[in-house]
Length: 348
Image (tube, rainbow, N blue to C red; front, top):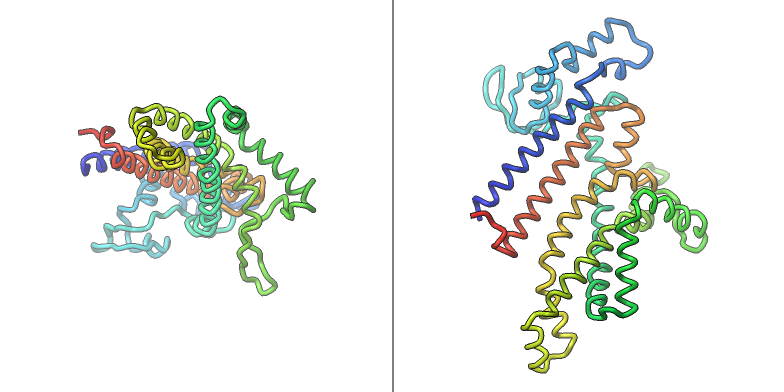
């Protein structure tokens, strides 16, 4: 089991390294970001100082290794670097130190704030939205899948299958626009919901106040696709399980249909569903980008889209790396969980 986990972690690190290379090539491999930092007004001396601060005066290969050194948790920095970048971690050595640190994602071109601070401020909104969407998908999708399997070929089964096909086929951004318009605008007087809104309000004293009312529409929109997939997966898995010999034996022993379906059927049908749930949570973190923007939900997705509009590349680069880390970590946990549930998937 240890070898299996270490292998998954190693593959995850390789994937993350590939993401770092791709992010650097896309956003810093071409062009000169120095002009974006200083804006339209700025002389040659100002531009040169900015280029030096961002290492843009170095060859591209050196720029990449400096960027890799910044975002890596294990890195080498001198005293000036540690002070100027306000690096947090444990450093050992003389003038040049080896350290275990929090990754430095550099500073925003527009606000001059540390990208890590910008993303940490938005991260709770994205996690909250993803959890809420997954809860909707799980607590509606699994019962629907069970009912569809138990009532196979009935109108309930047909309705559940047809609805799940629509849910899988409909693009999230399109459903987001429709749901926001209908429930947040046309029927707003009846629903009490708004077209846009974040997870907090600012009171008169400038303090944040939690407002989960605005979470309902974006969470519902984001949860439609995983809900549809969980419904179909649960139905398919339940049909396979209910056709097994031990289910017929349970009926022969006089157990009620409810006990057979829940205690013997559902428990054995949930293995692939659990794997899908863990995998889809990572998908939700990535898929929340446009949903957050449509509903004005304060999260990493909204921050990233706004940064793209302003050509604030460090924020975009940082958000892509953070999202990739979450995606890789959750998929590693999903593989480990599935390996614990079904030892046959482990590589000996």
